[in-house]
Image 1 (cartoon, rainbow, N blue to C red):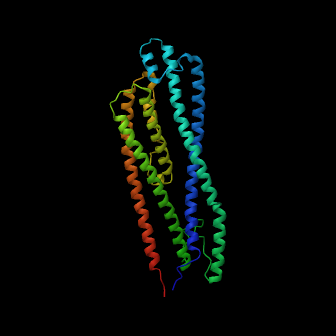
Image 2 (spheres, one colour):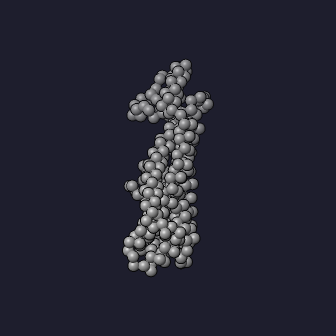
Image 3 (spheres, rainbow, N blue to C red):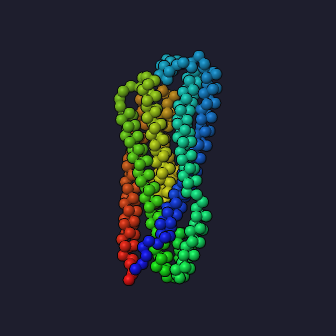
Length: 318
């Protein structure tokens, strides 16, 4: 009877899962660092622009957004219009950049902590391989190349039964980690879809945007959309190899930009809301397609895991 309680199978599977998670976290960490750098620069620029504009138009510091709009619509002073537009655009950019920076600064320590918990993958792999070879020597089985992905998979010789199981354990560990990544991507995707559904209601309304409260509420909704979409896009980092996710360098977290781009040049709040509503609907369709692709990918992983377990159950020798 083949021993199904191989002392290395679980360790090999755990190491394979940890290796894949480690690679996934490294990608996410780099993306967060880029986001922090970008948001930090945007915050600095927006703060500088606000200071400059406030120095020039301090008498307007107490005006509301809609109050400013009313003043601008009634004036022919193009310089005043330009100053006020720049001030409000910087205010909006600052709020959005601060949101992204805060979110990324919160996520980065979580990623770093998980990487520390995983430890040194190369050292763990070397230690496990050393123990595996010692065990094979004691068991009287011939030494084989590493089965954790570090060796040449094209070596054409017959694996021993235990090494064959170790290779299967490695594959199982990778698949288990990939399934966990799919679950996390689905959770992030469902949140993004929910945020977009809320944004569709907000941007699809016909109520006039004639108060600070209405404009600020819309901006907050769109910022929340952008944060959720950015998180979903990062969770898809590994799955993009299979064509799942945005195409090329496309970013999804541009909903607020759809509303704010040029807003304080023309002050057409309702017109910009309509533009944003179309972008939200476009993103909803794209996110739904990606979520479907992620689900299909997840079912494929589950089928492979199930087939692997059935194969392991049949590998019994007398």
